[in-house]
Every structure is written in structure tokens, then in C-alpha cells.
Length: 148
Ligand code: RB5
View (spheres, rainbow, N blue to C red):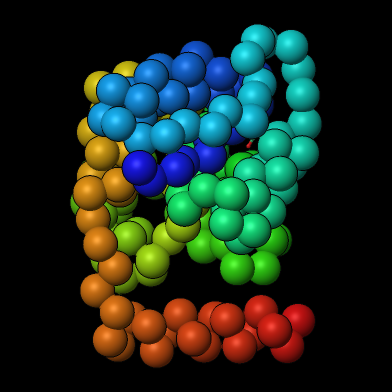
């Protein structure tokens, strides 16, 4: 069973709850890193926790939701080894896996409707990395990451 980490801030909590349920109904093992209410929190805390978890192998993939998805994507990409993609359409969700081997998807809870978000997440999960020339490009990113 593929394990997926999921987290959000107060701007993404409603969508995160829905997507956690969707993931479970698609038979993914879901690890929910919070939050679960609308109290104001700082999105980097959740992005960094989830990103470190994905890199440590606590889950194969991660899903982050904040108001726009932007803050989560900026923060999670500070974790070496994370390839976080901010996505708002199905095509980009597929490409994020096929070409970029994204291991975290970031979504906007105040941007996406529930059905669109569900379809985006499904497209992301169902796509597979194509390797080859795309790996060469990712290697350039990893090298830059190692250099700092
Ligand atoms: C919180 O109000 C909001 O700033 C946050 O959820 C997110 O959209 C940041 O990028």
C-alpha cells in the first residue's frame, strides 16, 4: 500500500480533510500531519515537517494544502530532495510526475473546488516518471542543490 503524507494550514484544512478521505477511499495509506481546525498556524512548519518526512521515506509522496498552495510550495522546496509542484490543473499534475518526478504536490484550498482538486490529485497519483532525458534534468537540479 503506497503511503502518502498530507498536511495543511488553516487555509487548506477543509480541502485537506476531503483529500485525506479521497486517498483512503483509493486505498492509499494516509499519514495526516495536521492541522485539523481553522486556528491560525504558520504554513512553513507543516511544509517542512512533511518534506522532511518524504525525504526520510516516511511516505512515498506528500500532499500540502494552504490557501493558495504557494507558501507551501516555496517552503517545502527548501528541503533537499523534495520536488514540490504547485498545481492547479490535471495536465500539470500529470506532467509534475512524468517529467519532474515531483514527490510533493501543493494545492490551494481557497483556489480549487473539491471536484477539481480531487481530479488533480488522482492525475498526480496515477502518473509515472518517464526517466531518460527528464532524469538528466533532475540530476542538474540535484547537483545545484548539493552545491548549495
Ligand atoms: C493563510 O492566510 C495563507 O497565507 C496561507 O494559507 C497560504 O495561502 C500561503 O501561501
